[in-house]
Length: 59
Image: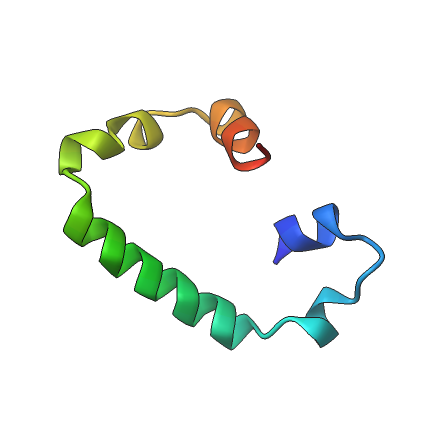
């Protein structure tokens, strides 16, 4: 939710976006990714430091 607040400061994120549905979508996406991506493909993300991860997420 913090990323949405930063990216869309003009929107009241807590009023407009459901945390329940965001969490549900993330869980579904994680389950799908587990099925289609090999464990070693996650290494760049697992090993990324905070600065690298933030830069990647803001692309």
